[in-house]
Image 1 (cartoon, rainbow, N blue to C red):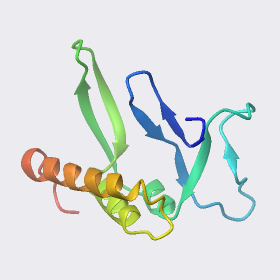
Image 2: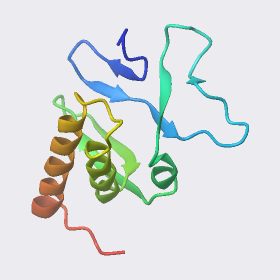
Image 3: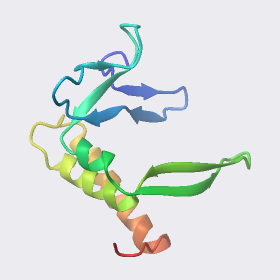
Image 4: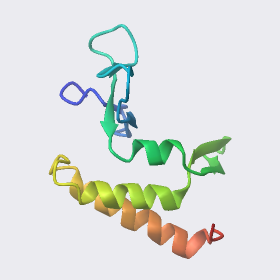
Length: 120
């Protein structure tokens, strides 16, 4: 997205935000993903350290065409906690906070109904 360099969006409207932990010591910031000025830039989030060290989650996903793949991502419970905190962060873009809260609620509903996860 031209006005949000941390967000990639495809022709179907699928969006991905590129996030990273807060820079420490000699970490570069802002963090570019390539040498092209108009390319994606990772945005820092305060919970990035927690996300980076969190439990991983793998799940088989099936596309509309029947192709299968393994999706490796963070534990859905961590996603819910991260999105809940982001939705309550005062310096978060006010347009994104309702989306964060909705995503947290939706994923929590999916966990409750279809994905009972063991307590750690």
